[in-house]
Length: 346
View 1 (cartoon, helix red, strand yellow):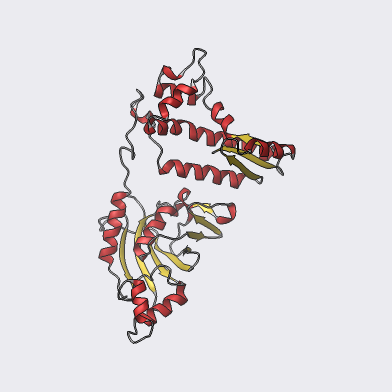
View 2 (tube, rainbow, N blue to C red; view 1 turned 90 degrees about the vertical axis):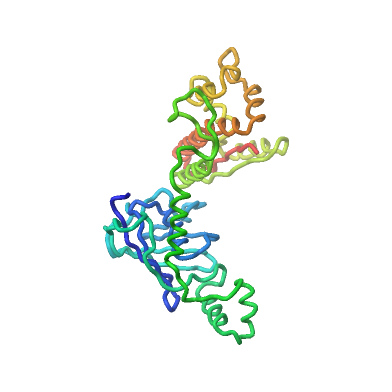
């Protein structure tokens, strides 16, 4: 069990009577997991964008630019807010605009009597339906659903899928859903896919790509956006589509080029860690006599076996992203006003 817990109360703003929940989370919960918990305790379906507002900063899952906020998965609640009585915001569905306020009612809550690290204690009233139109739309929906004689009652009932009880709230059901969430999101010994035997020690074995790989890509790009003031333009396309011609024109206009094909070769040059891992994983059959990689032999192996292709990508992709970030940072430091073009293979 965790050593420190927060007792939180969340309430949905601009709704009367008030819709609220009181629940417990570990103080060190990350904001992306807190989002999951909020969705469950409130009764939302997690089918829209969201953001937390803490102080003057916003946090969301995959911001596309600096203006969209910070990456929520990088921050823990207890590192951002420590005092009892502090409040912060949670916005769900930028269209309907469901504004929530969360308050820390106890920053050192004794959770020893409860069966889980995350638990809902109490609450009141049902969550509004998704896509109902925000507080004004919900007010109209509730009034019509409570009036069987209304001309639109049947249409609203068909849209919702049955009758709607605005006062319904079952903490036992919420805790059942929370228990599923905690069980399904627990740490596992193995990843989603079977690891390839490479002769390496277990802690050095390379797992196949997973959602972590996608998150790593997003985080690397987010870092670049936060650290660089340069505009980055991607140039991509299939063979003979004119990509090289466009890149050449941009270079003539002063836009420096970062070529992902070139980076992919750099990170597996003889003597590099990427090179050594490839040899360890695929054997000496993928090496020429001059110690350079036999790309044709390697391609024959990985394109015939999806698992092995995933392993190769697990070795090379993080290094490619890191090298790309290094090049962008270097260019933004020496040529801060330039437009950087990235040639990305299709």
